[in-house]
Image (cartoon, rainbow, N blue to C red; front, side):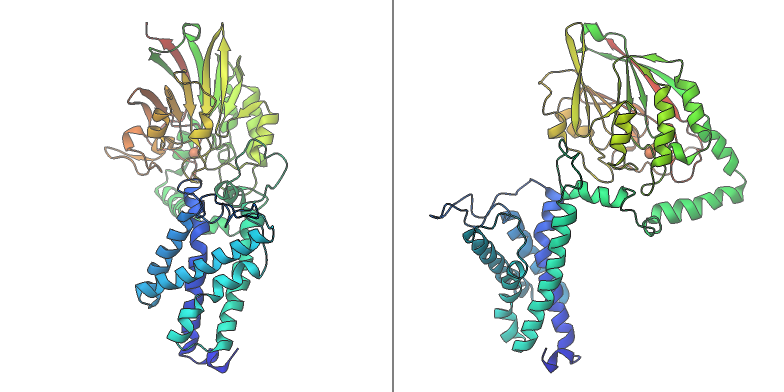
Length: 475
Ligand SMILES: [Fe+2]
């Protein structure tokens, strides 16, 4: 590097340039993470050259190019460049990126392949065609910028390819691989949990573990809250439907959600005692088996095995994942005899009639729900019971034709204040969907207050429940 790199005037400029280039480079994968398949049309519109290969390939999308321009303009302005300079710098960077893709396709490298150096050099160097003369950056400083940019961008591309886009194990067949799902695994699963994760979660570590727990202790009501949390009951509910097949008239579904079994001693035994005598046709588990959102899940799974043994459901037990769960739990739960619906549906047949149970992955925290996939096999007009951890996708579920929407997540507020109601519902849905039966258009819904408690294992003015639903044909 030239000596001017170390001058106090040029140094910040070089860092500003690097930050701008990295963020412009980061815009396309960020948009791919946020929007997945939406607006992901390729820049080359599928065009191939006489060599039979694509001009750029599927990874260079119009969305990514527009996002890079927007990022350049916004971040450029923020960093002290003129807005049009930011856009111009991102345009040059995008042209470098497209040239890289063009070269990679010509030499036969597939979409998404990593080519160290080639992947970054044009993207980092082209913007200097404007920046270097405009800001009097010398050739050695320019080389330094390209080298540092390339190194960090290469590490970023390795992270994306080897962690966010790599199948971690063979049992991935029915799961659509997306960076969003992989990020969930990296954050929530015990294999990747970080000791600092819990302390970085403000709500969990500060609000619940430090503040609320001590507030209740100081008020002398902590133990009463724990007793309230253990005082769960069976809520009997009958729902009437015009479209329920006659063969399913009187069909009983046991809905159990938000168990958080490892968070409260005595809860598992209480649930077992409640559900052991219940003879039902089907059982649905609404997710949140574990107390914490990361770390070990073994204890929760062991307790879940005890609960599973107490369930008597002729047509089986189906479950979904909540925001406290991780994908590692699926093989354990399935070995216990629970079929997990990860954006999937299963038919239930009776006397020549059929209804469907559709379930999706967590729509609240990880937003891994995929209703297109969950409803893909269900013929239009079918009687479909849809289960999601939270009620936040009620509009989408009705649009896809769900007749009944079962969910939990809110714990009925868990802690309520007289006359005001829940302090938090932890949900983006309207508060009237926070507990009990509700209706949206043609779809009936039920939000259960769940079995367990999360954060602090106490309840005030709410009661935990398992729900025994009876479906009735209105006619
Ligand atoms: Fe929960």
